[in-house]
Length: 129
Image (cartoon, rainbow, N blue to C red):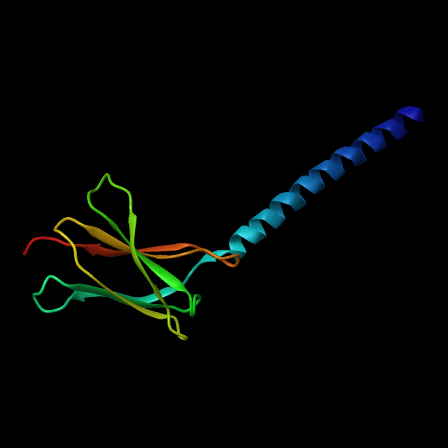
């Protein structure tokens, strides 16, 4: 009798540990899935005529009336550095005006929040004509 009760008790303890480990990973997976990146729509970049002045515009539907950042990097092995930041409108629209030397690449950064992951969207690189 004693052996069977020990066997049942150890089986229940193992079962409880396995069940708790699944509950912990399931809640972590759910919270990670719930935190999606920001939605950046209609991102467009271009040059004003042939002036060497550029723009990047778009809309972040999940980040209204908050600051969106423009970043640049000067070479392929360089890291992105902040250039400027603009506040989005009530509908989430933004517009950046910028210039730079040839070979400079730009991207838009929408910072993360408690509900959304940060979003990094490439704008493009300045190339020779």
